[in-house]
Each structure stands twice: as structure tokens, then as C-alpha cells.
Length: 85
Image 1 (cartoon, rainbow, N blue to C red):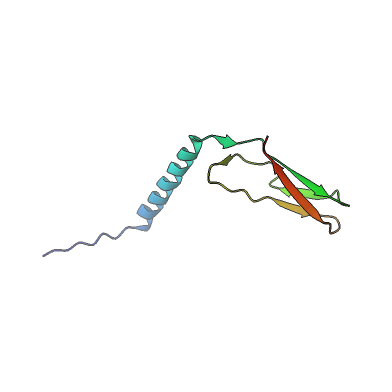
Image 2 (cartoon, one colour):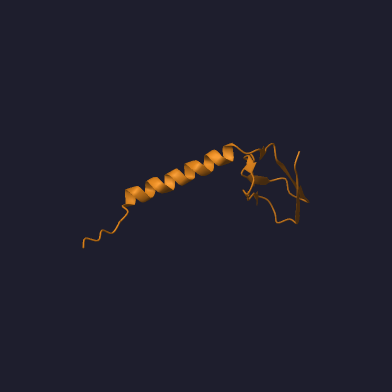
């Protein structure tokens, strides 16, 4: 009796991963998204704030977005609020 075991190669695995990523991207492209998102930072005593990312990308259902505020000035208290327009 001849038993053959399927041993996927690294190349086959990479191709599968690429296919899955393409399918996820196409699925996201078919959905509606939230765009023109703006984040307003309410700060006291600092005008040297850099938001990362500086422009918000579209957000699709199930996605999450992490936004950082880098303060190049003194330490301040912050309160952030997001508004979907």
C-alpha cells in the first residue's frame, strides 16, 4: 500500500496567504465605508501636536483604526472625541 502525504511548500503557502488577502481586499471594496473622518483633539497649553496618521483612511465594517497624538511640547491633559460626518 502506497500512502502519500501532502507536504505544502513554502511557495504554495505564500500563494494561499496572498489569495486570502486579495479576497479580503475585494470583499472590503464591495462594502460601504466611513470616509472624511476627523478627530478633534481638545488640549490645554499645547499647540505642537502631531496626529499619526495625519489623514484618516477609509474604515470598513469590522475594521479598527488606532490614532496617536504625538506632543512635541510640554505635557498636557487631553480629551478626545470622534465625530462621524
